[in-house]
Image 1 (spheres, one colour):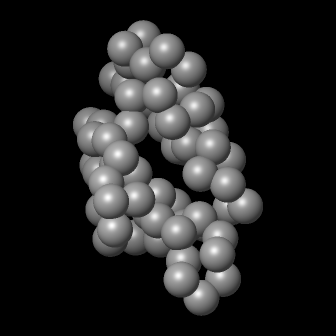
Image 2 (cartoon, helix red, strand yellow):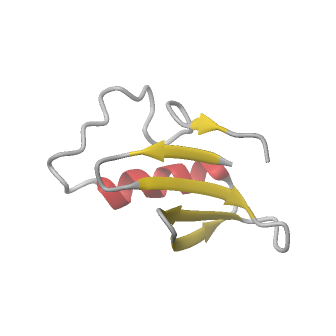
Amino acid sequence: MWTLRTRRGLFWIRQSSKTGKYELSIDREKLDTYDSPEQAAKAVHQHTSGFGWWDWSHLEAPESLAGWNKWKT
C-alpha cells in the first residue's frame, strides 16, 4: 500500500487481494483500478492537475511512486 498526502486529500494505492489489481482511492472514495501501482500514481497526477494549488516540484517523477509513502500490509 502506498499513500500520498495532498491538499485535496489522502490518496491510497492498495492491491486487491481478490483481483490482484491496484485500487486508487482518495480518502475513502474509490476512484479506479489499475494494472500497476505506477499507473495508479500517474492517475493521481492527472486527478490533481488543473488545480493550481498543487505543486509537484517536490516529487522527482510525479508519474512514478517517487515521493509516496510505502506501507507494509
